[in-house]
Length: 450
Ligand code: 9WN
Image (cartoon, protein in one colour):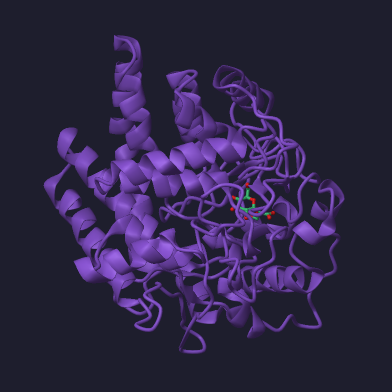
């Protein structure tokens, strides 16, 4: 049960607060991921944020994704950060440290970005945005439908970039070259791969900004982790962010099972939108092919001993063994046989996960409380992330599991009913952690409530 000293806002007030947070973080052309810790646009945040914005103003939701798409790289990559004008020094690493525009001919003109990507949740957001718009008036519908037509080729190019440049094993398991690309930066999923990253003595010095902006530095990754994060950036700079040279040279190359599951679902949604909006049959067929490959690649990672999906360290040739939420990737995109799927669902409901009797809300924690890597206050090492609860619920609804989807919504709202819109929550006490007024948390709460 939730802690007795937590305040619980009634739904209407909670929705009003969520709208206020999105409005407060809006610079006009983009909603920053969070007010102080993340004063720029993040790629997958923008996807979830646009779903929240769609409940307030379809035009504004579309503008959010247009801002991101305007920063698309020449080859199709959507960059993980789009920097706000002038805000060069308020986040580290900022545009100078990335040097993407100085070093790569593929970087977009007129806007500064990082040089890596994040999970492709965008088509999922576009599909949801269209659904929401269709509940509204003719103008909302027309705005959303026009956007689907305009954005479809760009999203297709983004998916093609992933399929062409990030499938080093050739079997559909998409790889990340940095933990930041997974969006789950310091998850224990990456610990063994990061152990193989050795920062050179020539790593240029730097000063972190994040530690000053959270109540407790222990909620954030360690300095040793940051050295490795920055070393990988250094490696990419040295090959000018050329996508294939990055994959060939990065000392971190891991098949990310969760990102691959998101890709499979996003390809499905984009293919369906393509059918409806008369896009070229050959391109739709490509998307269907990528979805099928990704789905079977996800299923093929399953550990026979635990039933959980695993990441693949391409450099070391090993599987990751920790119990993180990524283990449930096959439940999101499908692909398992019935027996394996049933078993994985009961693991999800069991005491090591959502059914843990000590948890304040039954949302999937980032790391299992039963795993030795579990740290309940530290970022992706234990806390519950409301936005991930939304993604699980959305996927479950799509798979036809309405009751499970509804349970995720109810538990997500329970966690977020304090109105803090925290980046993540302590799974055992429900304490808000990380940044407060985090945009994607506000966005998913709005979608849950409206
Ligand atoms: C690095 C913005 C982003 C999220 C990620 C989350 C965190 C950045 C950071 O914040 O990452 O990209 O500085 O820690 O891990 O998922 O997109 O909210």
